[in-house]
Image (cartoon, rainbow, N blue to C red; front, top):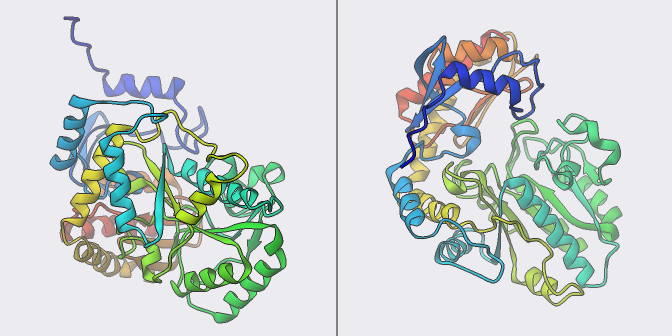
Length: 433
């Protein structure tokens, strides 16, 4: 047997990282806060290296909204190990397998009725690419290629590949650098938090003016995530559904961040009792273990595409329906459904609301809001990570604020005391803005 490979020290990890690794949304060689070395994760807790020594910190971000059951859950570990012992990966072209079949059936069963076909991909952004490709190919199959544009409301975020970037906020979003070379889409004003029938009427009027060229409306239902952590009344979703039906435009819901209980319903669409034509899910799908996403659509869309000029949906990721990712996703969804997740999420929401109340009195805070297991402090000025990161770690919490937002989306396994610890850290970070 080959000799065991010696592990790297935290110092060596940091040195290699600084020399060679590019992190999300980062600047090589000029990071205000060097990445913190993580060495373990269990339950809601991360083991991080700080000043050369290990510390424990609550993962208030669920590792970018994925680890809803925490880290290292025995059920998910067992599902992954069992699948690994059988089959790690096979191509999905011309082959199929049990984990993919089970996951597809599970998703069809729990998403809004009528979403009957499932396309697996590697990431949330790619699932949005696939959703848009479905919409475009649907209209081409009906000999209406002029319906090729998308409409959305401002303030959204749908991913970092080019088609999703084109429906992110064109001015205030993180992709404004690319506005001049992205596809030109149709943008409505920012959706208000509270219900306003006049807004819906104006949205529909704008949609009607462009209906002949619109393939689909694409939105994040109830919660706009990385575009600004904004919430809106679910009644807007019903109005969208009605408007799209009246003007012959498809409706796509991006539930990558909101799916699997995060907003207090299993899917954000459930708040309104609305079924989109196409739906994207990801992030929490695998419980934070592996990268996997899915795009679901109605049978009408699937059959129309399949009978069109191409005769097939022209997309096929190499790692599509990876058996390991599918198996752990089945375990994650079954674990969620097998417990009282609704009470857990409601309890977390109550704890966030209670703990964040103190932030309202801070001079630099302009809003505090909670939806399901999402808590947000909106500040008047940008949050300085060089100040925020150590302030949160001093309180045993890992936060990752962005722009002027201090927010948390904790694992559902967090206790009342752990949520209180998270909110205490959030308030302290906001105090220092």
